[in-house]
Length: 528
Image (cartoon, rainbow, N blue to C red):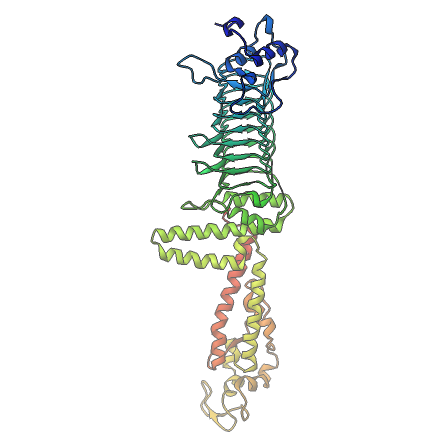
């Protein structure tokens, strides 16, 4: 049953003033500042009288369509009902037709507005000793908590706002639960503004849906009893996530599965290493004091990975955004780092499963991919490696050529008399294969077989050895420069044996690097 004005008996001085001015629609100023804890009787208004007027009042104290606007009052609890949750202001389930704006007021008891409906709720500059409980609150406009001081838990679980939640300059300290402000499931057509707030305890906006920004500019967030300071997991915001200025998140920040249009940040505002969770966090752009890959990778390294498998999504998301913004080189560096960490995590899991041989094989393969094609992100790097092997082959085969440690690479030349007899000095005789009589050798004093052969008739039409071409011909598997079929290192000489051994490595490197280059261009060796 609705209360009557007579039930309140003799009105207190501040209540009389409120009764006489409430119809004007102007702010009823009880005092020009926040009342002290021991406020005099002249500044006090009973919470039940506030609720009575907010619900319409009576003919003698008809509420203005604009609502109830009060400033500088001490809201005294007076509800005598034993089963009541609070002696303070309780608007549970009430449907208010006008705004409720209680600025610079002191509330010693909790303010309760669960399942209430009203155009706007404002508590700016007020002190809430035991917080606010406004779960499932429906607001046509917004909630205004600028410069509010709360020393108890504030909850607006599942609230619906037609406008914004503004907490600029507020100071929220957790109650016994360790929660400072819980707004999980909030639906707001506007944004959430936490500029220059000071939060001591958990600030939770899990699964909130916002039509504007989530603005934490200058905010300072520290934990109470909870491990997390700011939980924004699952948030869908059409605006940006703003974290910049002098503030910072001192402890854990959870942004898992959140979706925003952009990140606007200063890197120093993010929490320290081990206190950040970005898995599933999606955004379309970054507006920051730094977009360099070095700084953004340092940002990603702050994620909490203790005992957790490596999560590639934050790296892939950052690379995508950097690439879309035109920073392709930085995006490539991010993906390279992602591959390095992901493969290191895989090796660690193999070792934990006692698969040490598999871990070693994976380490070798990862090393090859890293320094040849950068895990497929830089396939042209394989050509640089080919150039290095080409230069090494030029030196090895050139040294073998200078030491005359080469021989023809075709059977006809190897069986020709010029080659066979050049292995024997001219003053000695040797039997030719299939011959009946010894034949004089053809090598001059101190002349090598290679040098002797090069001066004979059989070698006049033979291709001249060129170490530049020979190294390339042996290295490139799909190119035939017509040199490898004619010359080969002579393993009978020490330097020739070394050059012959290196030749196999040279050929294998050519095939391997060429295949890696092709695989890199095609994307076959990328984990993503």
